[in-house]
Image (cartoon, rainbow, N blue to C red; front, side):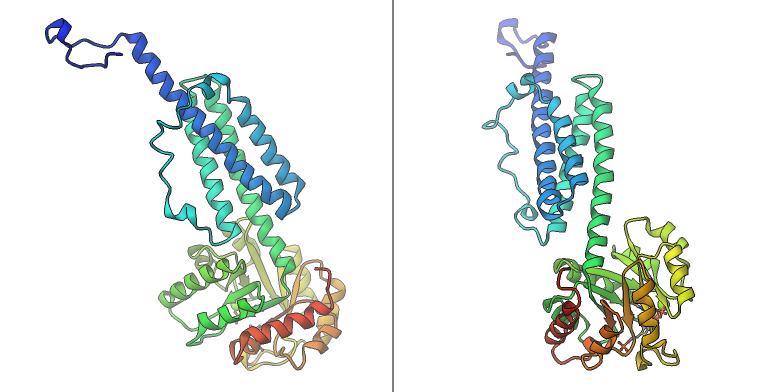
Length: 367
Ligand SMILES: Cc1ncc(COP(=O)(O)OP(=O)(O)O)c(N)n1
Ligand SMILES: Cc1ncsc1CCOP(=O)(O)O
Ligand SMILES: [Mg+2]
């Protein structure tokens, strides 16, 4: 086939334009190949996400949505588009990015595949307009459904992990901050709060970024104390707010429905208010007076018992809890505890984590 603008001997150098039909046909073939490749890409990515929803989460709603999206994508994969496939002649099949070879967690695997599906749907939306007038809007709608699925799924995973977390490490400033947290993560810790009441924001940002990466690489949740802005800046899983911090409703507006918001409570009124305002979990304490929070009177084991009878959301007993008294707190009804010194000052945070978890697991062997 002659190409547009090429020199042609048979016409003594007169530039011959390609016959409109051939050029159109060529372009059509390219469009078909793009559509064929991206229909495959979208379906493959959805299948990868679907497998996690099905086998990892056992969640029928998310599995069903992936399946229905896959089927809707498949409807557009006509034999005409498949026939345009030219795998040996496709320069893209050999190209892989180093990050495709390595996934640090299921979360990063899911994020990469959501990204892949969204990109493919966007390509299908744009090039599809050249193929069928209805294709653009059909794929635009699917793309929005995938965005919704992504944020629902990620939020669901976060909340599931919160409910499964029984030990909560609240950090204190330390020269060995990252190493101590990592040591506790190795012991099975799944929930960490970054708390530093005195550092400047440059240091907070640097440390919180490191800890977020670390926690996520262990599949653990990462929460920021007091500061919604910092939580957003480092893409934390949520924020912990005390009675003097931002109201839950304002934080929710800033953080959205998927991120976790925790609230400190010292009595039944604060507990009921936190639940009514939409907290995802509460701190219950201080159970005992503690040098980590000087001047704050103990709420005592009575409040722990009250929480065990009345809290409809996960709650963490906090304040002065260690390996010696954890069983008293458990006997008062606690299934979850938060600690600062017990882990931050431990010589072997891995072992202390394992011990505390083993005591907590005695009261919830099924979860
Ligand atoms: C899990 C948990 N519970 C309670 C607190 C205390 O929060 P707050 O009352 O805002 O006090 P500070 O920690 O900000 O000094 C907490 N951080 N985490
Ligand atoms: C932050 C906080 N809020 C209530 S008690 C407390 C500190 C708990 O620290 P520790 O576990 O060292 O007693
Ligand atoms: Mg606070």
